[in-house]
Each structure stands twice: as structure tokens, then as C-alpha cells.
Image 1 (spheres, protein in one colour):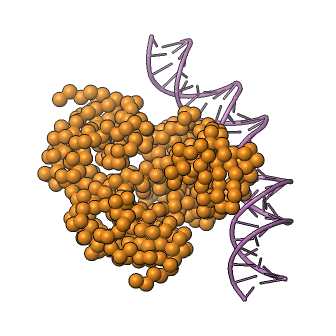
Image 2 (cartoon, chains in turn orange, yellow, blue, green; image 1 turned 90 degrees about the vertical axis):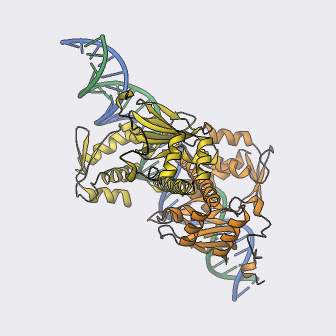
Image 3 (cartoon, rainbow over the protein chains, first blue to last red; image 1 turned 180 degrees about the vertical axis):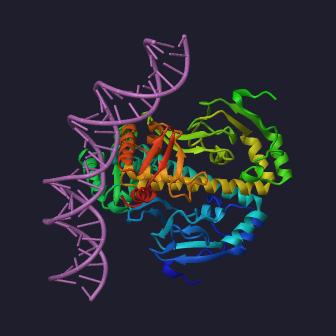
Amino acid sequence: MLSPYGLEIVESCLTCKLRAERIFCDLPNSALQAFENIKYATAYPKGAVLFVEGQSPRGIFVLCKGRVKMSICSTDGKTLILKIAEPGEVLGLSATVSGKPYELTAETIDPCQVNFVKREDFLRFLKEHGDACFRVAEQLSEKYNNACHEVRSLGLSHSAAEKLAKLLLEWGCRNGEAAKLEPRLKLALTHEEIAQMIGTSRETVTRLFAELKKRQIIQSKGSTLFIRNKAALKLMAGAS
Amino acid sequence: MLSPYGLEIVESCLTCKLRAERIFCDLPNSALQAFENIKYATAYPKGAVLFVEGQSPRGIFVLCKGRVKMSICSTDGKTLILKIAEPGEVLGLSATVSGKPYELTAETIDPCQVNFVKREDFLRFLKEHGDACFRVAEQLSEKYNNACHEVRSLGLSHSAAEKLAKLLLEWGCRNGEAAKLEPRLKLALTHEEIAQMIGTSRETVTRLFAELKKRQIIQSKGSTLFIRNKAALKLMAGAS
DNA sequence: ACCCGGCTGTGATGCTTATCACACGGGGGT
DNA sequence: ACCCCCGTGTGATAAGCATCACAGCCGGGT
């Protein structure tokens, strides 16, 4: 099969090796077959925009490969990144269910493989498959949960340092690094993007990183970042 | 029937006069009858706590009468009010569906009538009634939508003035006052609570109100607040 | 009528952070 | 080898707001 943008396309959800790990992919075969019939497998290059905040919902995008930046944007151009979506997530779900405009903008930051399902097809599918509908409720709950964390972080933090510490700890807990005393993580985003994730300015992020390095709390080598003093970070994230 | 806390109890969801207007109440009779069998009609006085952030989910609370304050709270005691829930809303829904701890704290601010449904009963009910499940997805979408607005307001505003203006406009658009040039609204919350809604301090809210009055943008008589210059408010909310 | 407690109004002070301005450095393209 | 652009580092300045401190005010209870 052709592989646009350097992707290896997964042909069918029925044979997808990742099924068991994914939330939405793990459905009984009858439902999966129905899903198979209404989905369009598509691929996007890096930097493609799946949908824009405010658009009326065309349908859902099931992310199979690559990462997608989910953000909101103010009238004066300021951007706030809410999350970086990973494979297995369903994007545009809440808007598609409710019929209200997309709340977020989705932009790929890797080459991505995506299954698109048109809104009317998807709604019909949900009515016919109660178990899928329940999965949707679960996914929405998770998204809501995420959003609540975001609200907590934005609304209840006193300082930018606190928010950055929270973010680094969260990142450090991925990839099975959670238990380690000195977790390491790939810094895949620029200072600008990190600033947009915690709602502060690029300069502040740079300064904070400089201070953390000076205080020996973190250390970086290339794009890898080592957390040398997890306790100190936690202190910053907790009380400040 | 006895009416604790001065409430007139609605006996059954089947005969509830408000059914048609409500999102969750408006279900086919078969589903409603099943719901009827698993719900516990309860009443709470003002100031009662339905559930606390971090508790593992006991079940859902369908609000029939009264208002409930939904908030999150930081370790150092700072509180952020996310919304004031109105009759017809389902509280604790996302936690009950996902099994994760309640994200918010729910506290009544009026005497309230509430239908409680235990988690296991509710999940069984959802599996058996696909249409109810779809309603749940819709409700969750709406909650997610709300949360996104909150994130936008908290994360993309430059000033407290901007957030207050947004809040006042939102309030002014309720109760069919939306179209009016000079909408009026009941100020049912203290400055402290308003501060907690926009993530600022009580003093700042007081000062902002003083300035808005001085600039003739608003005017208050008792607990009623008149918006005299909607355009100016919109300007503050939009650009600042 | 009194008092008391919760809400509101207002000044002074200092911290945090946005913003502007500019320098540096490294990697990719030609 | 060059340049150019993007990302990073750093200082100066000022705005915005939290915080403390205290005064007035209104309503409810006794």
C-alpha cells in the first residue's frame, strides 16, 4: 500500500494490532464491523488542521498514529494548548454528539493516520450500538476530567513556576518513568509551546528553566530532560 | 406529603410537570419507569454537601429543585466556583461513568430536591437503555463544553476586569434579558463568591464594581443590577 | 435598642509577570 | 561557506493584582 507522509497505513480496525490497548477500538466485532463501514481512513502531514474552533461539527476523528495539538485561541491571537492528543483518542467527539461548534482547534504535529466518521453516520451508529454509546460516554468523561484538571491548574495556581512544575511532573510520570527517583523525558515542544500550555509567556518559561537548572532541580542534555530533584519539584507544584 | 426544608416534593419522574423542559427527564416511558425504580428521592437543606472532590463516586444526583454550587478547591483553601447548577442538571455524572473520583465539590445554596441513583444501578440502567445512554453522552458533551468555556475564560483573559465583564454579560443574557439593551439581573452571590468564580480576590471584585458604577456601565438597586452600557461591557470582555 | 458578624469599600505596599528590546547560537537550505 | 530564521537567553520597565489593614454598614438575633 502507498504510504503518504511516510506513514504505514493500518488497513482495518478489525485487524489493528493496537485494538486491545485502545479505548474506542476495543468493541465487539459486530459494532466494529459497522464502524468499519462508515469510517474513512485518512492521512495528514505534520501541521495539518483537522478542525477549527467554532466550526460546526462535521464528524469525529479517531487518532490512530501521530500526535495532535488541541488548542483554543483568543481573538487577539493568544493560544492556549489544552493537550497533546495521543493515538487512540477520539477528537471532536463532544461537538459531534451535541451538535455545537467544535470547542477546540486540532492541528497535527506529526504525520498522522486518522479515521474520520461523518456526523450523521456516527450518530446513527451510536443509536444502533448501545455498547459503543457507552464507550463514548466514557471517553467524554475522560475529556471532562482532563478539562477539570486544566481548570484547576489555570485557576488555582499562584505562579507560573507552580504550573510549570506540575507540567514537568506530569510528563515525567509518562513512559513508565513514574516510579523512578530521577525520571527523564523528551522535551518535544518549544518554550513557546510550553508557555501556551501553562498560560504564560515564552520569556517566563525560559527564565523558569534557567532557575530550575541553577537550583539543580533539572538538567538537560540535547532534547532529553532529567528531573534530578523530584521532591523539590513537587514542593513547587504543591504549595509554592 | 411532608415537605422538609420547605420543599414541595415531586413524587415521581413520570408525572413531573417539568419533564419536557429537562434534558435528562425527557425519556421514553419504559426507560423512565426503570429510572423510577432505582432512584431515591431526597431533599437537602441549604449548605448541604452532596459530594466532595476526590471522593470515589457513589452515584449521580439529578437536581430537581434548587441551585447547587460546583467548585474545586486547592490544598491551601482557595476555592474556584465552576458553575451554579440549575434544576434538570445531572451532578457527578462523569465520575460515575468513568469510576474516577468526583472532580468537583457540590454544595447546595438553596433547599434542594434531588434524585440520587447508586452507581451500580445507574450503570446497569445505561447498559439496558441505549437512549438514556445517548442522553448521558449529550449531557457530558454539554459539561465538557462548559469546562472549555471556563478554560478559555481563565486561560486567555488578560485581566480580572475582562473576566468580570464576561460573567456579567453571561448573567445578563439569562431570563430572556438577552435581547434587551439594558438587561437586569439578580445578584445572588457575594463579592467573595464572584471572585471565586473568576479566580481573583474579593477586593478586586469590589474595586471593579466601583469602577463600573463610576463609569455608568452598571447600576445597582438592592440586589438587582442593571447593565446600563452593554456595549462598553462587551468591549471590556472582548479586547480589554 | 443593642450588639455582633458577615459583607463591602478603600488605601498602601510589594510581588509576579507581561512586554519590549536585543544578543546569541545552531541548523538547514542554497 | 554563507546566510537566514527560529529558538533561546537576559535586562529594564511597568502594569496588574494579591495581600494586609482597617473603617463603615446593614441585617438578624436577643
